[in-house]
Amino acid sequence: MSAPPVETARRAATSRATLGVFALLLAAWAGFAAGVAPGELFFPLFPAFAAAFFLDTVAYNQLGLRAPRLFYPLAFACLYAEAVCVGWVVRRVRTRGESTGDRPEDA
Image 1 (cartoon, rainbow, N blue to C red):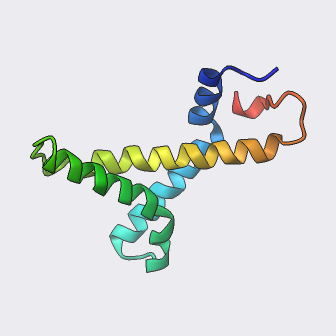
Image 2 (image 1 turned 90 degrees about the vertical axis):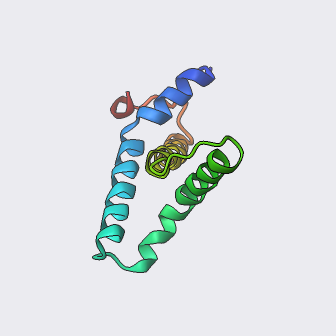
Image 3 (image 1 turned 60 degrees about the vertical axis):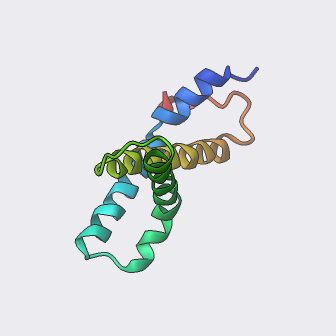
């Protein structure tokens, strides 16, 4: 029997794979911002930054929020959402073929 959707979402959001991917994405962003990383390192960050730019534009144009520093919290949130998606995929690939899907290191 599979876990309820809320439990599955909690596991995906708090697994070690998700937190590791989030740390790697933040390190890539820091390296790119510092100018020590090559430009190709921006490609994994692009989906999160595109979503953050979109949400920032919607907040400015449609909602009238004129907050110049709104992009950075949105970028962190979108990077975490991207990490949760990658962590969920990693978890599904690792547990494919197992009967329960419970892994002690992700608890």
